[in-house]
Length: 316
Ligand SMILES: [Zn+2]
Image (cartoon, rainbow, N blue to C red; front, top):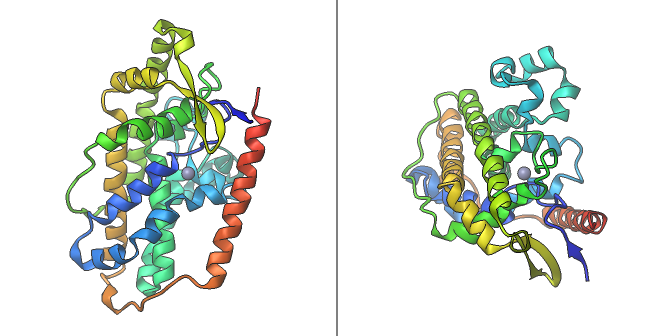
């Protein structure tokens, strides 16, 4: 039997559950003219919401698209960092940027690609990039995706990453009200995504402070519990500890998740508008070719292998 610590860092993003949920809910926010197409492919968008995570270990250049370690650039990172990729490369250098994460720039790139896909009326591209950009936008809403202390490893709080983005949504998100209303046009995508990572980063203080506070006053024997997951006995934060922490955060996880749903829907809609509002009824039906399916299966396999590898290595 494998014991998997909560601190293995194997859950680098919103849990798969949250990613799927965010893409799915975003579909229902779209105006009629574009919703028909998205609804038809809602299962694709839901399932492929986690593709970028599956690719993380298989594709060079993928990992850095999911985060930005703002604190690496000091207290005034948000004033120092150029809004646009080109300027950022000139100022900081590409290697350094990639090392510390590029999510606010990559979302802009993906938005450009999605707009192009709409112009080309290429259904496969539209759906693939829509699913991907939904993932990156959701990641940008996670406070722990904006700090180099992303798993509490610098403050003795290892495991906090998966705790916040997987465990808490798993336990409590069923009760969240994530309904927002119809999608709105994003006037300026770069401003929007930078405001998003700024808001995520501003939330990191309470993420760390409350966990520390609670740990200090909590019976250490009751902080964790063991649960059987896929036949693996897994150490996880106990329900009691999770519930208290969730209360202290006072709706933070719900707010970030809700904002993510909003921005994903807004982004799909905005790219469609920017492409000149192409009539999506005219887009031919498409289904995944055998090649597509093979590639997906291969990505999944490599991800599973990697996951297992990390788990066994991470045992203490
Ligand atoms: Zn991710």
